[in-house]
Amino acid sequence: MERAEKKIKILDLPLAHSVVDRAEHLRKDPDLLEALWERAKIIHSDGEKFLIDQESGKLAYLKNFEAPDNGDEFFLGLDSGDPYFLFLSPQIAGREESYKTLREVGGLLDHLQIGLAVHAQGLAHWHKRHPRCSLCGALTAPALGGSVRHCSQCETDHYPRTDPAIIVLVKDRDDRILLGRQKVWPEHRFSTFAGFVETGESFEQCVAREVAEEAGVLVSDVQYLGSQPWPFPASLMVAFEATILDPENARPDGNEIEEIKWFDRDSIIEEIQVGELLLPPKISVARAMIEAWYNQVPAADGSPRTPFNSIEMNESWRK
Ligand SMILES: [Zn+2]
Image (cartoon, rainbow, N blue to C red; front, side, top):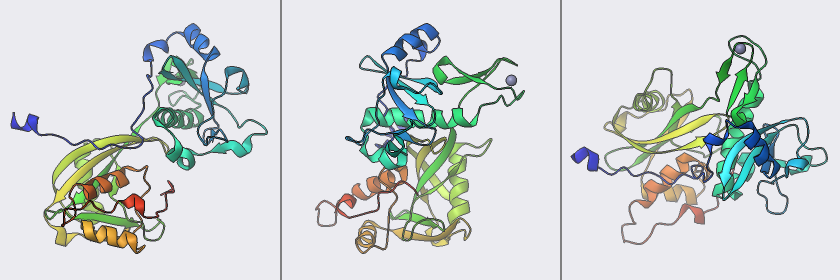
């Protein structure tokens, strides 16, 4: 019973805020979907970029008659009685300047649009890259509002894939955190450790393997912190916190990770302030984990800690 009462603290993650009702029961009825399409709010993607409303900077909504005639429509769900669709086609001629990536505009979107955008981004990417049946090679067509592709040659349904990846905040028993730096990142960027779950592996096994591979240490305790979609192109980031017992053994793998550093709450803010540390973007799981850890304990004199947000940091989503 004691275990069951143990509280798991789930993080508030920026891309995990979808409010749309996916209304799965409506997908089976093509006539109903057609009726919904007639009054839909439609977001438009070419598979890479979204059409943006120039005034608000948010996703633009098209009416059904404004959608080009050379694309596919996918049902995203309902909100406050409004049906939402994605339309996937080449960019609308004359409006090329108004297309932007989700990484570029994500920080401006409210919960409704973030939910629509991460769903649409994943669907658009998958449909665009999976035109054929993986069993018989025939062309497939979207079905059930775009939630599957159907092969009429061999009668197989194909579903969009989601690739689980773990991301882990490594701590020692003194409540310091270990961050690593990949060679390909911008200068001064450090972040938490992460990697894709391999076939036949559990999340917990993946956490232990990635931390051992990238930082050379053994995890002794793993706690779940939450998850968020990361459709670049098809990931689901599953967040954990792991405690290690042998911090003195930590070392970078020298391959993917070129440098690792331990931080306590005073040293992390100091390094940010002098520009020696650039944290990952606000929209990322890594940033949310690091901020939550930082804010867990007030400063020694009891005063609130200097918020990261008060310091100018590069908010690009790119890395
Ligand atoms: Zn087939």
